[in-house]
Image 1: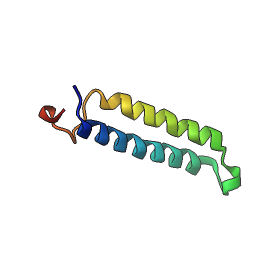
Image 2: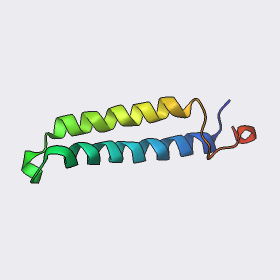
Image 3: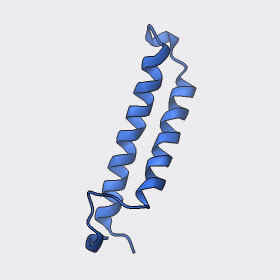
Image 4: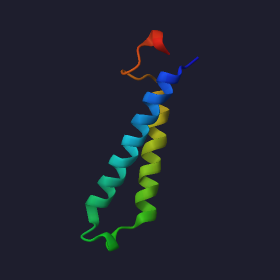
Length: 68
């Protein structure tokens, strides 16, 4: 069974990945904020967040095995 510490670390990683994916998407093609396709940026961020959570199930280096 996974612990509260594991879920906290996984959620933090997921939020960071969401922000990084959105920033990467926004930075690739937008000159001004009006040029940003916000639906696509949010979609890229959401995909990154879900991917991070799924990858966290394989293990997080921040959480030791005995703490799960």
